[in-house]
Length: 325
Image 1 (cartoon, helix red, strand yellow):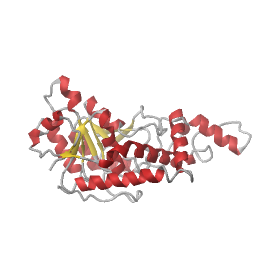
Image 2 (image 1 turned 180 degrees about the horizontal axis):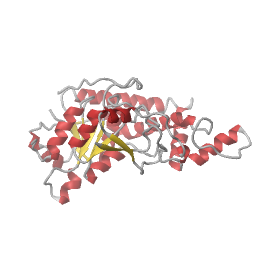
Image 3 (image 1 turned 120 degrees about the vertical axis):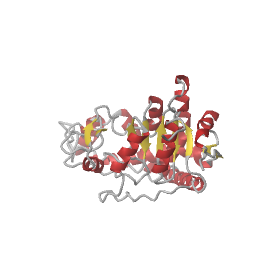
Image 4 (image 1 turned 90 degrees about the horizontal axis):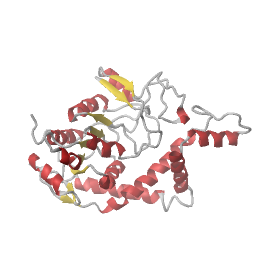
């Protein structure tokens, strides 16, 4: 199996730039854990050339776009796939998978999931099967689309969902500011030339190496982490994250999955799943759907932690228009 990997996943001896000037000449001396697992399973990993610039990869961009583009994507449970060797892997980041079909994505996931001694956050699989849930704001077309699965569709309410976007932005920017401190022109990566002193080296290296988007994230992240602001910003965002996780936990005590249309207006639900570290799979319209309905019928499905197998089964049934043959 030939698998394309993005430019922020380390391949030993291969240029890995993250699409950023800051790492224009970085050649890692090791493989990312996912590369070693792909190779061990008989796959071949090749580099992709159009990776978004470092830290300009926004959460939700993979899932919101894929179902509309007739592809399937998966964000696995946090801890189910090693992040070792993934450049700038914050606590909100996961190795996401994309393929033409649910079966393709499931096959790739089976290659790369599992415990890795180089990543202490990885854990085993304790997936459990617990009826289907729908957000309170889910549209009727989605409810109708799921009827073929004999699903029990129940409207759900998430009180903390209103805080998901803000909490995600605060935490992700704080992570950015903290994680990118090491890019200073001293150890590796881009280094400004003809500097008169150390401070000028720091300033020019980061000013010339980072793009405007990452600079904005660093500035805001530094702001929320300062002594005077961390209580009003970062700590409150972490409390919101805890509440979101608790609400998902309560839902999954009764329901197997949560679904929503794959459209930008449901971004808060996508980001809430990211904050909770939950697996999310997206799938385009079912086979045989009229062309005019394909965009509206693209679906994202959220499951409990380590519920990937359940997501694959639900997405496969939806992909096949209600059949499993």
